[in-house]
Amino acid sequence: MILAVLPFESIGGDPERGYLADGLTEETIASLGQMDPERVAVIGRQSVMMYRGNASKSLADIGRELNADYLLESSLRAEGGQFRVTVKLIRARDQVQVWSESYDREPTSVLSLQRELSADIADQIRLRLSTERLDALARRQTRNADAYDLYLRGQNFANQRTPATTLKAIEYFERATSLDPNYALAWAGLSLAYSASPINSDTSPLKVWPRARDAAARALQSDPNRAEAHFAMAYTNWALDWDWTTAESELRRAMALDASFAFTHITLGHLLSQTGRHDLGRLEMQRARELDPLNPMTYAMSSQVEFQARNYAAALEHARRAIALDPEFWIGHMQQAQALDRMDQSEPALEALVKAGRFSGQNSKTMSLRGFVLAKAGRTDEAREVLATLESVAHDRFVPPYANALVHAGLGDRDAAFDWLDRAYAARDVHLIFLPVDAKWDEYRQDPRFIALVSRCGFTR
Image (cartoon, rainbow, N blue to C red):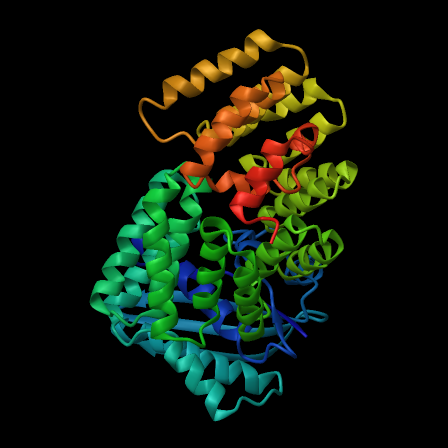
């Protein structure tokens, strides 16, 4: 059975409380995802958020688009110092309302709603929750209302995935953990904000690596049975530790605890593909798309897996789907560009990279891929201009050495490429994780220096 938790509608009150409605949506999704993983799948956050404030879509349309059996429709209203939460459970096939309830709470008790909601909804769809499972849901959140509020604010910023919002997310997660040092979800959120920042924000991996690992360890110490804690550790193992065996084990543990969290499937699919198990990676990506069908990230990462498997037509199709869902999603444009480049369509690839660069705030990945495509197209002067730009940008912020290595690889300057790859290794550059399967490096695979580097990184284990 598939359940979709539609975005909580914030009615009246302080517009600043919009983050609370979003937070309640996300937390309800997460709680229900762990309710009965073998029998109930819950649609991911990004997909349902597509319907926030969208009055043009009927419930029948939403249910059909999400392939959901039931829809949970909720509203949050601030009234006289209290919150009123109204919840309706609707059967998607005929839009029959099978249950509704209202909850009046003081602001300090909003965090108790997940357990009550989960139990009531489970009863309505004729599932039985054991006392142990209910207790686990109750332990999911802190008992400190202020820490919970800070956590929701942190999640709101983390989901935006920009350099500025990542810094804000880190600030709020740190404040939440200072109020509750055993707050596993806040520690996990902090770890992920740190470990993803080298990819999202061109942050120095060496700067955030120990912080990400420490926060993930604190999350597991606080609650070893929390899916998010295992996912945070897995992501650190994958992107920063380069310990992919442990990463896979942690991802599978997270999946056993919460099979509805789409990003676990995305990351596992990526890892499987990077270790040459492309067919298994595809299956995980397919499951991620089923769980979060309107999330452009699921399609962008599906594109990456197909690209790594050398199926460029499928990679292009997934990238275009990501862009259709969000025309300003820079990763979708970048994935489209690298697929087009492999299909000998350099001009359309460069056009896609113009959009990718603009929407990403000139992330190093878009700049370096542009330099690579220009170089392969014989436009060497323009490729060298990209190198000059990267050098100039490096005066103001960290630029991953991999970016320079990729442009030099496109130019065919092997010595310079390997010099920058060595610098990337010294900087623990997260972009090296693509080396085992990235088609852009195929011309270098037989070079003993390339073989030695991949082995030194531990990617051949």
